[in-house]
Image (tube, rainbow, N blue to C red):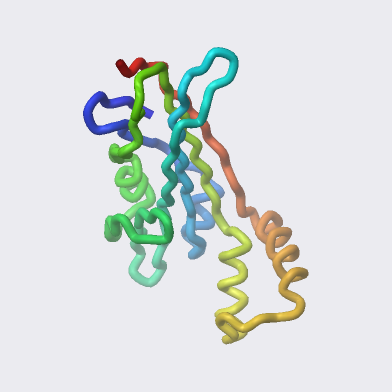
Length: 177
């Protein structure tokens, strides 16, 4: 996280889609979900206090028929930005890496820092559930074996190579007067 005095921090990233496994799964039609959580921490005497936080998601998918990558940013299940399509994973990642300003600033004097947590997920059980529903044509119908199916989906996701990677970065301390 990079702290900006006026407009809050600007978040930039790099190489979140560079993993070979992630690229392979994208090429085979599975969505990569990047979940961002930016936390604002107030420095305390013994313990630091979580002052506020902001969360959003970036979804990247590949359309093999058009051979393009689509990138969207969502927050609270709302579409914030549709970045459109890109001819390569590198171009999609360049878009994701552009600075994203988050309006998360201290409201009172003190010493603070930001903590950014990013999780990259591919081939989740939700993807498998959606695929199974589509294959069965039962979109939205309940199945008594769904609990077993979810457990199997999670196991199958890991066997097929789906992964979840976790990154964390802390800014330097700054003082608000």
